[in-house]
Image (cartoon, rainbow, N blue to C red; front, side):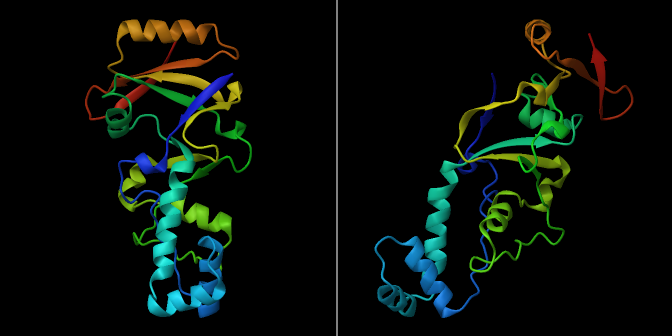
Length: 220
């Protein structure tokens, strides 16, 4: 059995990530319906009174749902790129770690989805009352600031929460060693890769000679 470690959105280093605020434009009845559904033991009469006293109560209730919902999800992030200097620096122990290579076509439909980076850097216009649950989930979990566009990120969203989750072994097809990965580390990972079924392809990132860049080359 192969395992992926999913992370809670609550622990992300970007305070905007997974914090997209849905549009709450709607009728009075829609807002009352939402309050009754989201607040335990709240009657329609009490919801109407609360809305009258505090017009922003829907936004407050929505923020509470966000706070409680986020820690129950697990996210595994991937990228289309394997030679980005910044990502090797940030996510692979300053180029000393490794990069796992997955076969995108092996993932079942809908398991992995791309991040959307709005060109205007605004939140999507997804509505709390008129958008379905999938649209709301995607708006919150799959939308990031355009500043992160260079990462070209895709995500696996795990409803079982953060921690280790099983995945099909044939999804993983290879490993890339960083340009600063130590010789003992490479030897140990190679040993494990050679006894694995199915077998894994191996690559090594190296600094380019005359530019700020990485070249990823196959190794045995």
